[in-house]
Length: 260
Image (tube, rainbow, N blue to C red; front, side, top):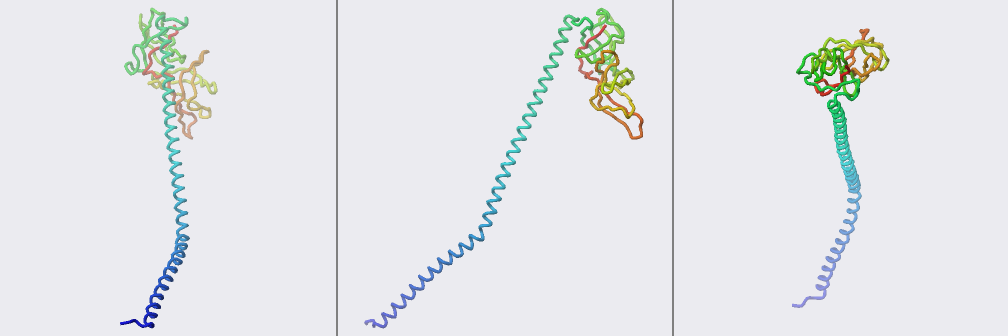
């Protein structure tokens, strides 16, 4: 059966219309997608910018903390190195003093006015801030002979003498009173021993004094006796009570110098 001309035209128009519709839909879809892409990009752009800003801030923050951490670690290393060098310097200084004292002990007399002595017994083996030294009357040591550190500070006096040993009573012995001078203002004071290398003194409250000030012997040599460690006073008090300590650790003393 043959298809008429009208039917063929009808089928042609039908397919042509579908093609046109599909092409139109395709074009519109592309345009709409492009339009929506623009809207979406515009909407998301601030978020992207914020995200980039946050990332940069985090990166800068991490860099700052890493830099700070590095500085802290470097600072800790330098402090440790400084402490090590200070300890080494202190050790070398003590070693030099000990070697000097040992040299004096070998010959006993280097300075004609003093005698080097080794400490046989010290607190807490001996009570009441007393030490026993290994020189006595055989080396012209007598009661009242002054005993000091090899570096200079004076510690006490000989209280008993034997042929080869002597007993030394330190100025810091409990109840022992020693005339002294405050270095800051040259005011005379009396140091009262408290034991354990510690002293007490009382001064008028209007006299200026600071922690770390030195207390010197009242004789012409003006040698170090004590260092101010604590200041105590009440608003109603007319005086200040001062605690001071000996310049030497009496529990670790090894050598002293004795002036016959």
